Each structure stands twice: as C-alpha cells, then as structure tokens.
Length: 166
Image 1: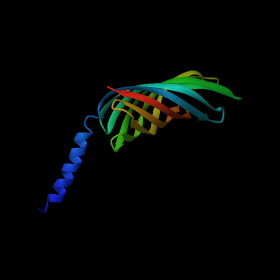
Image 2: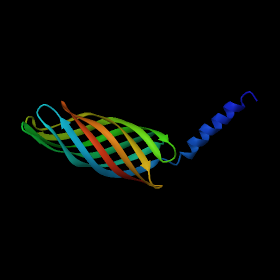
Image 3: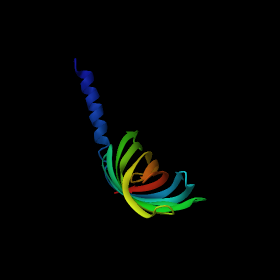
C-alpha cells in the first residue's frame, strides 16, 4: 500500500497521455497577418497573409513549413516589400481537451526589395508564441505573435489562422 498513491498518479498521467495520442497528424492552414516594422528608416504596418502545412508528432511537438507575405511598407525615407518561407518547430502544452499553448522557433528564407539595399535575400531566425483552439474535431483556430528577423530589421507579425487536421 506504500506505493498505491504513486501507482494511481502514474495511471492518471499515462491515461491522459493516451487520451491525447489521437492529437497527431498532418494539418493545413492559412490566415491573415498584420506585420509591423519600426525602424529608423521605415515605420509602418501592413496586412498580409500566411499559408502553412505541418505535422503534429504528438500533443507537445509539431514541425511546420509556411509561406508568408511580409507586406508592403512605406515611409518618408523608403519602402520595403517581401515574402518568407519558414521551417519551424512548435513546442506545445495542452490545456484541457481543446486548447494548446505553444512556442515556436525556426528559420526562414526571406526575399525583400527595399529602397536602401535593393533586392536582397538571406536566411534568419524566427520565433514566437501562440494559442490554438480545436473548435471541431478536425478544425481549429490559431492566434500567434512572431518575430521574423530580416537582416537588421525585426518584423513583428500577428496572425489569426484556421487549420484543418487530417
């Protein structure tokens, strides 16, 4: 009887992990984004869009690829226009049966055209935080805040998306 409490606790933990085991697989999604830039030369924001595909390995880890329109920015000292292809890992924590909090980290290959550097491209970091809510069994919504490094500029991107699990 000395180990009864530990045994029951272990059963509860492993039982809940098995209940969440169905929360894996391929997903596709897309949404609207608001990208903001606040640099000395350019200070502006723009609405854009994002499309993504991912695979949820388990309730805690997913890998994702995305294509993001970075928008068009203009200011009195110049303009900026670009897009990005991303590869990220999402580290999630389920909260109840339908909500997941996550952090993401990865890299993105960007291509931008701005008045100072002309047409340029590179590979930089991206990271962020978000929340997903499974509205129906295979359909969910996501809200996330990301930072995309584009050379010396940091773009703040807020996204509202819908995804479908397969």
